[in-house]
Length: 204
Length: 360
Image 1: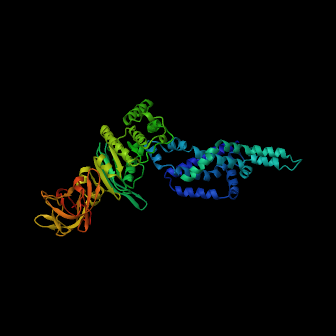
Image 2: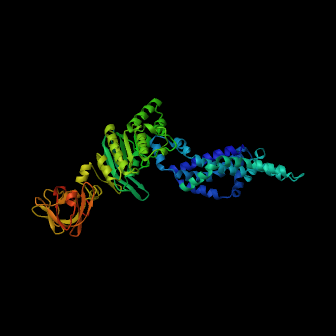
Image 3: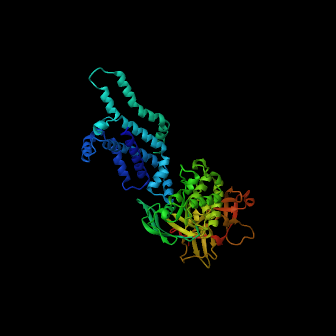
């Protein structure tokens, strides 16, 4: 949970901000940035694990809470940015122009005009990130350190103990408990999920 | 009140030159209309004046101040967009007051101004509704209201009526005219509808391919179009263009088909040689059926068909190898057939050079 909440909020907000900037402001080289992000989304985690370990240990956040959160945000960014960019690109450009004539700047437009419009897509992004980060095993195992191991790693530790009798009932209970949080998010927001995904798809 | 002065404005989108050296002076209190077909650069010019698009060259002055480098919000303008661009998540009241809240105008002042536009535009009943709950005409009013609360120096309107149905458009047109008169504001208005332009404007700039072809009052534009394009674009049904040549005698004559039409008193700008090619332009309302009392030139033509338009009927005639239309009273046009004699009102003719397309 201590990993999940900051990672999800930060990566979703960063994605929204990126998407907004890339779709409605003339950022120099916006298309290049987008292409780079897209490529980033295709690179398998395993390829950059070792460099990432080196980088995080150099800046001193390897094997800590900050480390795992930073890594999650980093890996979430390409997909989040794409999702939000496509959603925002579907919104009429005149909306931003009107707000500019009204005197609103970059941040004011983002907070007052864009974010209130993005409820659906925010929920979709939250669900995607929650499931993704909660289910993550590899990154958690490597970057989180002993103190902050995510549920998946702990579950594995319980289920694969080779000493003593295997208590299937305990394993099952642990597995169910682990699966609970994403399930709850789905139940709470499922209605928006379908709507948001199709909205993003059609308008993108 | 303040005017707008644009000097040498140019703007390109990649290889496409959207604006090629625009010079435009809008006097304080003018209702200036930018008129032209799609893609002529009229909306681009408006966004450049608003400061929403960067420009490549030239300068813009609003109310005597140089604003070329300023942000849209610092130019003293308010704008109405084609799609209205109301903020969908805000109520009408918050839509109206957004700009004022951004500028941290005191609360009492915001309320006073919102109350003023609400009264002016009669949108009192819908202040707490969202834009999605409003009809097209209501949204239009709110969009105009959002511009008015700014109490800007200059109002910019980008085809504000194009999304309304025909009847509502006529109503809003009258309302806009009334607003302009009561506010005495400077307005720059973009449209491709020449009727809107003619009815609303105090001055019209006809644009084509990034240039202003003519900038004049509606009357001058209609009666003395400077170029062939302006003549053809303004007026519905459009002007007749007959090709022929000019002849020099005691009076200049226009030779069209087999006729020689004397051009008594036509103020020819330049002197030119005999049998020079010309385009002879005459509006349908200046062509009438000839009778015994007709003086002035008469031509013979074959009736093709008639188009009843209510107040009058448009008659189409074959004149030699060319076609000519005439606006006729419906009673006289009924049952028209065969050969007819048409009288031309020479005082209302426009002659053009077919090469340069300029007025002669």
